[in-house]
Image (cartoon, rainbow, N blue to C red; front, side):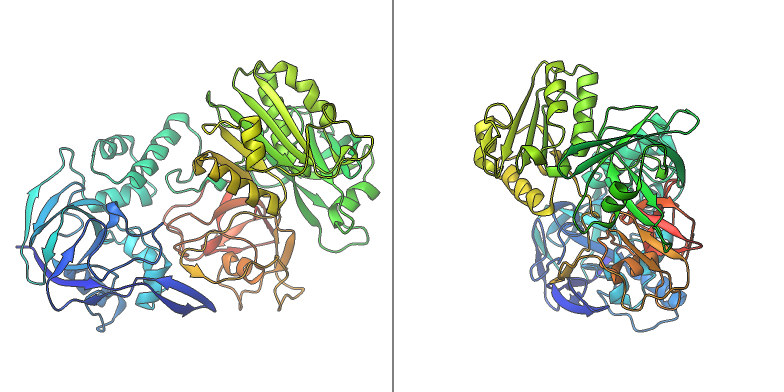
Length: 587
């Protein structure tokens, strides 16, 4: 007979970890009296990170005393207390290999339904004082599971757990956990899992992505876990391309068109993608790596990049001062996930300054397809001398049945003509969106300076544009994800304080930082990135969740610990990898 041994609750608190402050509810303590269970929580309980824990589908976390005994033996420990694994219910019975998703149980005066296995993160490693714990829990088939609350009521230690129902399609917690995290994703089992109506939405999305990946033959890796930023991997390495044309687009923007020296076809990019250039410094020293969006029409003959030459920009200045037609540059394959989505929804291409480059490629693709979608080009520039691609946009618009454009100049010159060069003076804002009629249901593609993008995202949110329809490209790095970490200051990427001139060179291409690997100081490339304040995304830090999956532009890495499933070819997991030789990473 299954029993509830302990009810454990705890409110989030701040703890110190690796020089950071983490807000977490992982510490749970037993309740001595009966406890009321609500739809979202137990009385006196809370979660520090609601994006990863808690909510209706994850209201109550359950862990078994039998698994306690297993971990005591595996870890050679005898200091465990109820709530040790962050669980709300410590139970006897109901092992993960017997409990099914959708099983329903009555405990005391409440009724519960199993929704999903636990998704582990680094905080359980902190609580257990064992950093490997997220991977160990997942790989062992003993993750524990979450309850949804079907009937609110009181529960208490000693209550009998009575099964009152189950799903029509039966798969255990252990089976569902392995189906997502192990390297094997049999199609029949994916289809079977998706027939379980009570499976939580997040796991359903992951299984749908795995099934879609098999259907399209999209490639290796785990499509159910890989973040959007790693969704379009490219083969590592650089190819030599010849500069075929150099064009001055505006006062501070230069375009370079490049082709294969022997006329061989290039890999066709997706509209919105970029390439990485490896620029060899005059006078020696480590090369510069810079990412540049492809700004021209889709082509297998030429790549065109457009570069803003900043007064103190090393790469832009190098290209302007030292590169001439006929020169050869080292160029990566196209990469990136900021791409034009198919469908019939309206499209808004929203940019400022050099941020026009990736959305211009999207406009070219829409024009080439003679798209009948509603298409709105909205751009902000200083004035006409600093407004690149104006003539190209005017030339492309007639190809679109429902295309229109709107341009704001912040400081128009005396020769700039309203109605011809631009449409309004000032900055883009919510009032401008109302004036031009930005459709709320549109897919919006946004690129420009950091402050501009923050303002535009806020204005679009006020317009009720759904977050999942705002597609953002950040030139200098990516949006970070550091769950639970609070109060951390945002710093410009920089070399670590102890950088030496020995060891493999790790270049973070999008952040423009190249630092040497020091095995005695860092356990992973993630730790080196953090020492450089390079924006990163992570959750488990042990090769389980794939949130840190990023593009491997060139080079080779080793893994320690080994991830549960390798990333897609052309990608790496920065949380558990170390460089074998010089590497360039898409961060």
